[in-house]
Amino acid sequence: MHHPPLRLIIFDFDGVIAESIAMKAAAFRETFSFVPEHQDEIVQYHLDNGGMSRFVKFRYIYKEILHEDLAREQEEWLGSRYAGIVREKMFTIPLVPGALQLLNDVKGTIPLYVVSATPEEEMLEIADRRGLTGYFDGIYGSPGSKADRIREILSTNCVSPEETLFIGDAPQDYEAARETGVRFIARVAAGDQDRFSGKPGVERIVSDLHEIRQLLSPNL
Image (cartoon, rainbow, N blue to C red):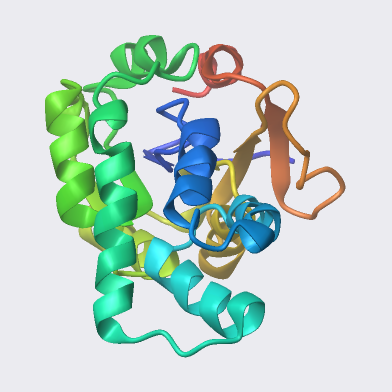
């Protein structure tokens, strides 16, 4: 299928820019260490719903797995506990292979954005501490939905969905791309579960961002 030239690229962050999926799964396990009999199910739910706000996950876990009410104070405690576990690790965890090279290749050519499910204040701090802020025209996090953020970015840049690529690694990224009509490439790390093969609208599945560089070079 022929596409017009790319005028905008949007990245998810966890699993696309930062190699943080395994670390955050371990952090979810530790956060719920007080219910060891449910940890495996909780971690699997977390992995199956990457790209979703941690607070939405907490509410689901309490309602559907623990079958308990989630008080606001407990939700805040869970959020603080989880953030405390991942905070320092996010400042040092490796980037996805090829991520920095791709950002250097494309920076200044077309606008680049991050749309993440990480709380926005936290996402901004991570990008700043990692020296990544200058690569992006905007960095967005929760509580805004990914689809709404994508629409906002398209409107701000006066760019059509067909001229925009979203690179994600989670089913929620794919759904946001389908909802907004933007192009979508899935990143599936070696050894991770492939949740994208055979789905309509997935242009390519890549294992790292070196492959994205090769794909994009003739299109920019």
